[in-house]
Amino acid sequence: MGKKEKRQAEDEAVMEALGMDSIPPKKPKIKREAYNAALADFQVELVKLQKWIQEEGLKVVVLFEGRDAAGKGGAIKRITQSLNPRVCRVEALAKPTERERTQWYFQRYVEYLPAAGEMVCFDRSWYNRAGVERVMGFCTEAEYREFLRSCPQFERMLVRSGIILIKYWFSVSDEEQERRFQRRLQDPIRRWKLSPVDMASRSHWVDYSIAKDEMFAHTDIKQAPWYVVRGDDKRRARLNVIAHLLSTIPYQHVPEPKLKLPDRQNNIKYVRPPIDDQNFVPEIF
Image 1 (cartoon, rainbow, N blue to C red):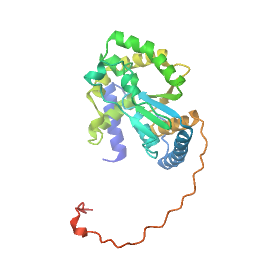
Image 2: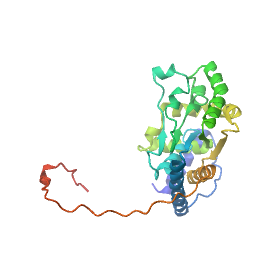
Image 3: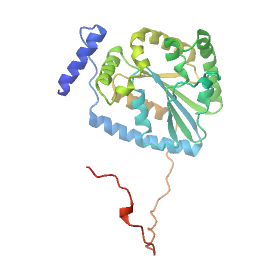
């Protein structure tokens, strides 16, 4: 099946699932060559930002939240793939253990906050309570209301302590989300992305919208505002979020010392063991 036929089949599956007669027209996609060129330039700047974070001892926290299949993971991957994982790390916490369920709600996240010279990207964060836990009934009404009261105070405390806190919400239309779900359903490489909660979210689209709006009403604060990323076009979304991230943290180029490779050690009187004593991976390619 060619790309055109495959896309048509995806559109038909989306229309059937959503009870639509047609798919609304979309902006033309950024061509791959232009996208790759812009991304390469941005990744050079991200390396400069990384060096500045180290040099100045900054503590940066970036939260990635949003709809299922909205493109959070892809954006995080493009931001971090050229960076030093010891400086910029990704945290995607699993569901809490029995012990963690008895802790202060924010306690398990505090452990993963950055030290000086580090940036942490949370692939979902403490906002699970205002989203999936609220919609799917994984928390009580009292726990949810307490979160809405305490979260702004918690984030103001983080900012006062010197942490740079940046919050992104990835938005995606129901048509595009359905298309991505259908693609994951058919692709064995992407099938793992469809968790039981993701599947259940299909029947809670409006509930998630209500939860997001109420979350914004309480937590879109001056000290740590929300920034919405339009995620229907993955390439545009990735470039837009990287451009915004670079503009949010003022940084300067840190001069690198000139490097010169030292001479290799001269051959000394050392006889290496026979190469046949080692186990090699079979060269089947």
